[in-house]
Amino acid sequence: MTMTEGTLRPDAVSARDGRLHLAVRLPWYRSLPVSCLEEVEVTVDGARVPLRSVSTGGFTGPVAGAGGSGAWWDLRDPLDVALDAPGVPGERHRIGLGIAVRIPYIQQAPGVPLVQRATVQTEGTVR
Amino acid sequence: MSDMTQLGTTLFSLTPLWRGGADAVELLEQVAAAGCGPAVELVGHQAWRGFPAVAPEDERAFRDAVERLQLVPVALGVYTDLFRRPGRPMTVEQAFDDIAPQLAAAARLGFPVVRATLGMPPELLGRVAAEAERLGVVLTFEVQGATTPGTPAVLELVELQRRTGTPFLGLTIDSSLSTPALPAALGTALRRLGLAAPGVTAVHEAWLRGGPIGPRIGAALAVVAGHPREAELAPLVAGVLGRCGRTEPEEWGELLPLVRHAHAKFWDVDVEAVRRPHGAWLRALSAAGYEGAVLSEWGGHELLERDEADALAVSAAHVALLSELAGARTAVTA
Image (cartoon, rainbow over all chains, first blue to last red; front, side):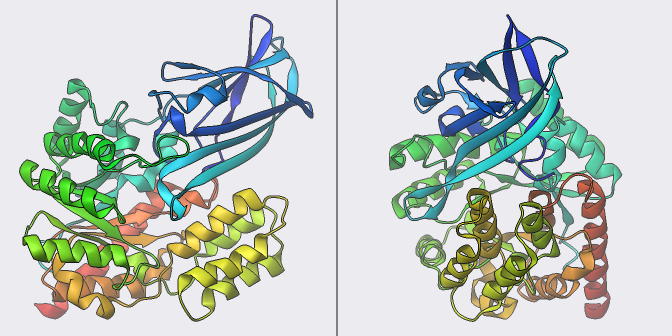
């Protein structure tokens, strides 16, 4: 299992109140502070869709608000990504995900923390 | 090897199982059943929700499991998450407050040694070392890959240990210091990300060049520059090349008395690829009088997908190889 593999599991796409949600798994080997979440980008059927919010470990808000959070993204928990896109259970969609997390203890150059990126394409049935 | 030396596995090797949702007790049971013990190392932020605030029931379950399974907790991985906030590193005070509870958790869980990432700022290092001594936990920093005996962070650590004379400060030595060839699994990972065969060859050639690691990684990064998946290829290339060192155990001889924990690192499913360097490290540690544990550490999960390798099976094969090498050593010295 590479860090990318398993980021979107087969049951990752769901619908709540008529809108799509994605369950995203951490693309790293240990839990990270939510404040290390740098980017989340999602496409549905090839078109970029806006995010309503991301939630995990007690944090809910925009990705831009994650940096100030004291919450943790536990390795065992998904990040719930609420999409501003309609969704109905049983539909099939092509999902594209780009995610970046800062690795807070590895510097790729002095003073520059490593950013781990994963891009995943999958097709799933909305739960 | 000394009769005191224990072999075992760091549960970091089982990252695919952790990411799949397994818990600490479940994985300890699997490690014991596969013959991957008795020594075990865990990563705090991997093994327990809320770490370092481990729930009392989780702490009890861990202690009960290691006793029942006759495993020996030898080291806990701890971290200073200096860049937790975007844009600025933690202050020394903040970083101390971050890591001190992790040392306390190690003591509570029964780990005599913690393993931290090399390169802690000197002022922080002094404070954390004093806290480790107060708690009776040995603070080690991992020396791996392209690190050399002359790396400034190694020199700072050695200087502090010699100045204070504390037995609670030392090194985790990792056999990746002596890597004969880039892992075959790296080629698999690069090809999966779409790097064509000439590019994979060029990455290998960059690593094979002479000279310090920085320019060699630079040459390898130039190979993936402009590739559509450069953002994923670049950290992979830099990360793996940086963790494949070319120093020999003899070059570390003077520092071996400071080793308090050891990793035998490997990447490929075919464990025979590391027979020579791992044998050399077992002999060097034995000759230096090392009596700590040597733990199998498989990093291949970073490069291979789940259907390409079974973490527990490759770990079991590697621990068997280490047993054979250590046994051969005992037979020779007996």
